[in-house]
Image 1 (cartoon, helix red, strand yellow):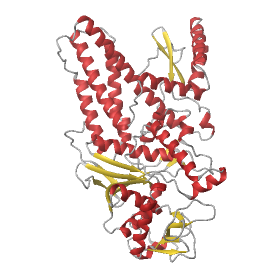
Image 2 (spheres, helix red, strand yellow; image 1 turned 120 degrees about the vertical axis):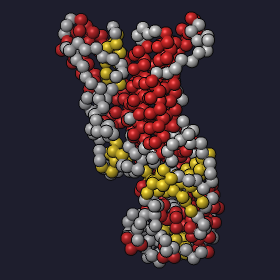
Image 3 (cartoon, rainbow, N blue to C red; image 1 turned 30 degrees about the vertical axis):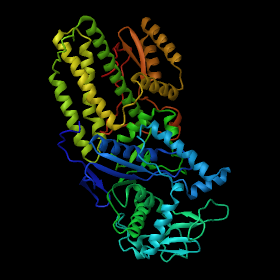
Image 4 (cartoon, one colour; image 1 turned 60 degrees about the vertical axis):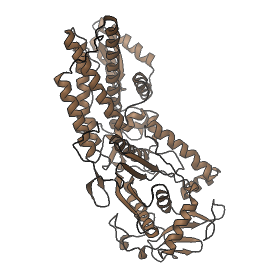
Length: 551
């Protein structure tokens, strides 16, 4: 799909405040650094938002044929880590190492590809000390009582990323008040060790690095002082990334990053997530009740630079969307397999003749390819893909599946089978680049989605089968009101009953009432990216309408 592209890849550069054509420093190669987590606790969905966004970028760059070197660090030395370790009586590096591993488990669950390098601060003290010495030698830093501070007054271009002026910097926003500073905005490069704290030797005495210097030192160590992309959350623009620029340029005047990329915040029911408010959720809390693919789908349903509002209603929609995708893929796989088995028996494909695909399939494939490249090239506009061309392709796949169940002339049947094969491949290719294509079998993903739905509904599959039998008896006795009631009660729990021929099956759906679990904390309305509530149309037994598995 990357060959013969008609759209130039453009990304929004936070430094220039505009979209720019992407031109890497070295043709065919991309170097990118993304600020990682401070590993003292389980990661939250704000972290998921950032690393899914940059995983999409990583995947798309690879899709375009670039050789990508992706570096994402771990901050395993920090005030928060030391504080938590002291509270529970654990060694700080052991604590941070443990949560680094937990983070990697979360990233694997979310199908984020591992970066090429994942350096830790504790392994790079030599590089950090060397950079601090260079900054001091350029008269841009000074030592005071074992601490080392960067002097913002000696770096005239300070504030060019954030647009802030020095006089705007006041106490707060992670700027510590210290009378020893020459300017209140000066920030720590090295912190003198306090009694009982973990420390490393340095020319200024035992201590540890400040927060900002680590990324300057490690990005230069792995990508040199000039590289293509630096990413992180919008909350890192100031002070973290602003300070990174100051440090790196002071240490090496030739230092330069071509593109600064930042993802938007995560809110819960339109309120910024906060532990004090009680609307703060770890990735594990969400994936306990929802499939990780549903969380990934939800996060990509909003453009990466826009704020994303997390609510139960929204992730229910994504969960249903993922189920629809995988049910369609599983049905395609089954239909293709059945055809191939039948063809081997009757020799239908012995000639090796390839039948042309239908005009609808040709048009759909062309539209999917073009729409995918156009929207991804436009600063990774994933919501448009999920809600437009991909949905059109899934609908056509289901239309073809329905046609194949009818009696067709041989040429028409073979043409539709070939259409199914080629369109399904294009859908898989798109899902793969988006990180939504699991390595597990389709049936396994569907089973996992159903298990999560049962857990949310606090009901067993045996309970559902019993309710199906009760409903069947009610319908047999023409008690359609009871049949409607049974179906409605299950729908409220996120369980949809589907009448297919003489059989009734169940599948997860968006509940018509709030589900248990996380809803007790947050609640929320469910609307899609285009403002439409994506709830399957309800039918009643009293109307005696037959359901179908997919639209």
